[in-house]
Amino acid sequence: SYKEPLPKIPTHPTVSTDIPVQPFHQRWEPESFIYTDGSWVTGNPIMGASVVQPGLPTTYIKVNSQEERHTINRGELAAITVALQQTLEYPCISILTVSSFCIHTMRNYSRDPSAYNNHVHRAHLHLNDQILRTRENKGYKTHIGKVKSHTDITYNEVADTAAKAVVEETQLHTVEFIEADPPIGGLRIWPQIRIRNTNDEDVITPLKNIST
Image (tube, rainbow, N blue to C red):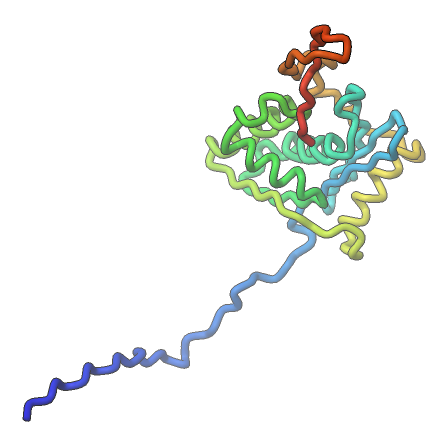
């Protein structure tokens, strides 16, 4: 009787062992990164930030902002902005931040700016986005990555200490950051709804916008 022959099992090609195996990850060089950090204590009118480029003087930043956006997120964003401004003509940069908020929000803004029309930091996100697009149009490469805080990474600890020194006024700031801070009420336009109170009277109530 006729039997269908079994298919041949393909074999992997022989690989020469003379080819050196390259490691997947390159060696981590702390000096090749730019470190940024922000610092703020609730209720303190002074917010600090810093930029540390190994081999160059540390940048101490005093961050000014309207009460509505006087948060640690603005401090972290300001540090990244200053780092981008200082390296406008660097063909390739890698910036590290402890803020996941900054990384995700900047990335999402670049994809859909209209989704942030009512965001408290919209003007600031737009500023950073414009710098990044300018760099991209020039063919420059920009990497913004996450670094864990308080993990004994030398330059990151320097950035953290520098930002705190500005807040505590033990170090005079070298940069005063006042950009991307429109007046209160000039950024958000709250939608309104009409409801009735217990006296059956119309009351106009603004809807709260839940955005960080």
